[in-house]
Amino acid sequence: NAGVTQTPKFQVLKTGQSMTLQCAQDMNHNSMYWYRQDPGMGLRLIYYSASEGTTDKGEVPNGYNVSRLNKREFSLRLESAAPSQTSVYFCASSEKMAGRQETQYFGPGTRLLVL
Amino acid sequence: AQSVTQLGSHVSVSEGALVLLRCNYSSSVPPYLFWYVQYPNQGLQLLLKYTSAATLVKGINGFEAEFKKSETSFHLTKPSAHMSDAAEYFCAVSDTGTASKLTFGTGTRLQVTL
Image (cartoon, rainbow over all chains, first blue to last red; front, side, top):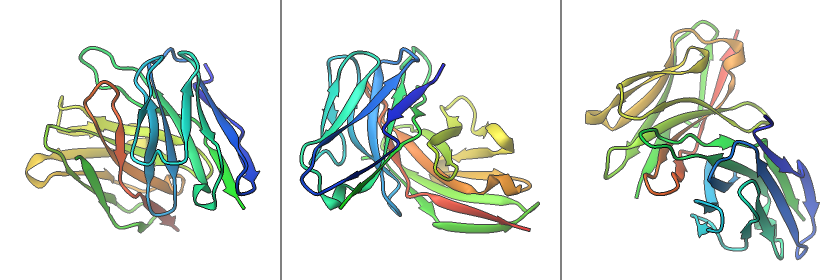
């Protein structure tokens, strides 16, 4: 199993450009998440999807949109990139099971630089 | 709202010395707590998690953490540091809703010196 995969690994954008970060998981998990990581701030939740067909805002959703394309895939879109969106983006997935606390599994990250 | 506080953004220990990374939480309900490790240029890997089954939790790579409700703490320890333990460590608390959203601390970078 590949676990959680993310593409691309690294991207440079100019201010105002758009792009989509892709995430896929092969663990048949229901829940998926997008986080951003900035120095000294830990990881902050951007959006999450509790199950296929649902999405909800996290702590820092402004400037982003998401699509839960199917159970495997959860994409993050920047419509008009800004320098403040320079960050490392992590996708994660988890599965809620009766009587067990779910664990989130993380992808390797996408490093985004907005000039 | 749930939150975690990690004391010390950088910790330096000698190889073979005790590792102690501090985490305090704030939660209105019994929390689920996690420690993740991030090696340079990699994603996050679960070290251990507390789910109320036992207050002393053992994880991978010789790490363990003790849940202390009276102190609202979940500190991470390892008796003897190894050079390979150099990484950034994150404490996190989980939401207990439909999707278990994680709230992370700001992280502690562990340096191990000879």
